[in-house]
Amino acid sequence: MLAATAGAAFLGRWEDAMFLVNLYGAAEGAEEYTFARTRASLRSLLDLALEEARLITDGNTQIVPPRKLTWVTSSVFS
Image (cartoon, rainbow, N blue to C red; front, side, top):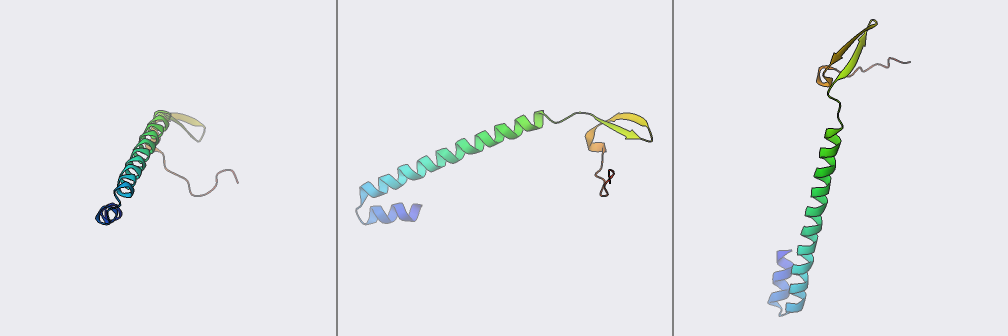
């Protein structure tokens, strides 16, 4: 980015150099806007996460935090 802008300025193409500066600024703004929306969406998803899970073992039901659960590698329903 800097090389293209400096090259345009060095060659006396001031309009092109200013266009590049504005283009890079707009791209940075769009990138920041996209990151902000992504962060907000991820926070919203985390707010939807359950704070408790129902664990059923041998007919007994317990309420436990989800972090206490582990994934089962074999299929229970097959």
